[in-house]
Length: 70
Image 1: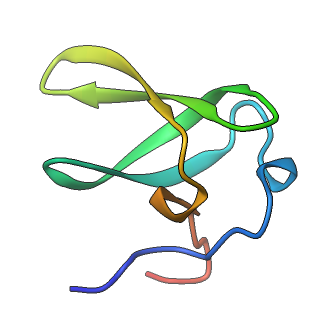
Image 2: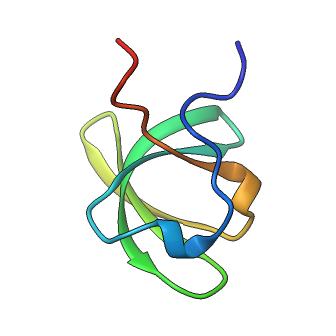
């Protein structure tokens, strides 16, 4: 399976509350942006019944959620 979603060109394309796909050691996950910085974002996501925050520092590891697919 390839990368999900839409590729980003800049951190400025992201806004708080926006749905995104992001890459972790376990593969691609879905979450929502909680904080946008000039060189990173923080994503809130669910792992089982626990909410987690993950910082993403590499633009290649985050993609916009594609609402056009399925």
